[in-house]
Image 1: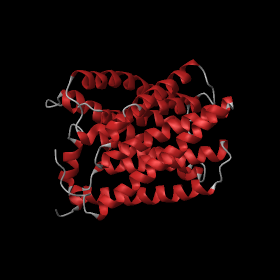
Image 2: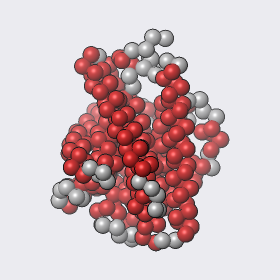
Image 3: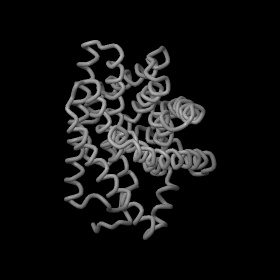
Length: 319
């Protein structure tokens, strides 16, 4: 099957999400777990390099094959991954803020403005589309919502609290709404297709990222609401661990990257909790999660490299 830029999938921006999440986790490990600085720097270099490769490729696809991009953004499932573009900018801004704050500001402005556009566009698409069916609902629908909660992480150092609260409120409110819809679909309708099963891990991300964002907005406060968010993320993590057999038997798809960012998010949240409570078991759990996230990102990266080598990326996908 012939590869072509026309079939460069927007889902590949999930690679940036996973790499950025791991990079941020190692930045927190440096600050709070006495890790060396160099793993963060190495990961940051890889993260930014891969970001520019993927972003440039997608811009070229947009220029050369605009109809293919339009088709992705009007697809009931793939359209949600469009917001991974703006999330990538926001995550790069968080990842690089420890090394080059002025650069982080630039990425933040682009990501925040672009993500609000994607949020409106996707919600409008959901409301107006006359061909959406229950079978199209899946955890990837959280992607346009999760990004809003990311904005305050760097935003607290850039703009006023009203803007940060605006983005945070949108993310948390629509997380609750969508979680109800997604749970209804999973319980009362046909199971997700094999390609989408890894997206179950996305369920971890909204409460985990919500905790991180709230931690930044309140300048390090741990209260009932922040613990509520963290413990919901923790419950979902353990629930998914109990379903491990279902994930281990899957063949590789690009959707495997859905494992990575949510694991990184719960890892970062755990490290932040340890920075306040300083309990040995929390620190140990954070280290275990950091190890697990590193292994998962490394393994998924390897499987992606093999898929590229075997010319299984940038080819027409089965619907």
